[in-house]
Image (cartoon, rainbow, N blue to C red):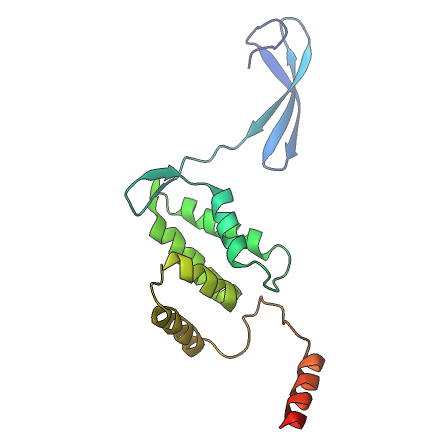
Amino acid sequence: MKCPYCGDAESKVIDSRSIGDGIRRRRQCLHCGTRFTTYEHMQSRNLFVIKKDNRREEFNRDKLLAGIRKACEKCPLPTGNIDKLVDNIEADLYRLGKTEVPSSVIGDMVMERLQELDHIAYIRFASVYREFTDIAALKQAVDTLVDTESKAPPAGQLPLLSQEELTILGQRHRRRR
């Protein structure tokens, strides 16, 4: 590490501290005695996404997060679930150990996790990802979801109405008949 004051390459580390995803080091130049701070951050390897048209694009976590947030918009999800979902997908992608991953692999990972997280978000994402061309294809996806899942919402999904509100609505519905 070169001293920012005199340019000498020799310095010693006086103090090291962990900060978030990196390390902060206090250093002292052995030539001029000046102290300075350096920050070290882990740089993950580059990961490229192979798009449907065979273009290669660097993996962008923010783009993935934006797409999932759009699908989950106005869904009753606990705070932090979407960020955790994106963290898990990103970690799984790096765990694959490949430098290039087809976009279909990422899409399938998102679909799998959204199906467990929220049914409406799953259908919203599927409608864009699977590029449904007609209502029959969308209906088939919904029917498949209903067949594979119970009527109850996924474990991570908050209810839209409380049990008490559901009971009151059910009683009102019965009275109207």
